[in-house]
Amino acid sequence: MREINEIILHYSFSDFGNAALIDSWHRERGWSGIGYHYVLLNPYPDAESFCLHRPQFWLDGVVEIGRPLHVVGAHTFGRNTNSIGICVIGKELFTYQQFQSLATLISDIRADYPDIKLYGHYEFQDLKRPIQSCPNLDMDWVREILG
Ligand SMILES: [Zn+2]
Image (cartoon, rainbow, N blue to C red; front, top):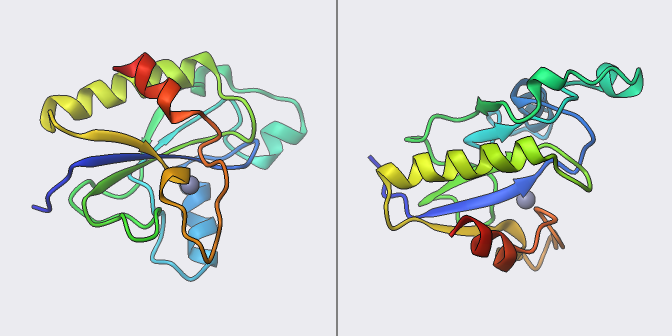
């Protein structure tokens, strides 16, 4: 098993999406499939539900599995080897259900990896490809709330 000591948070920078859709986006980029280990859904799993204003409220906050944890992710330049990548679906705001699921997921992960540290993608800027604010949350504030 690989050593895991970091959780790195991302956002999809899209109004909609789910693990299957991100998987297809990442394959279009020539990657071997979804680069994240977990995806936290909002009410819009696909373009149709968003464009037709058909929120699927029951999906809000659902945690989907991307890559298995034992497989190295593809989400943060230079930091994939020892990390878990979590992607929250959203462009600007996340939902309360997503944040609650995030808190639960992180505490579940901590049960297996008690010393794991939580970061946001923007804290590991790739200078060749600036990613600015991903996951669009102030990570000091997130760490304060999630402990
Ligand atoms: Zn990111």
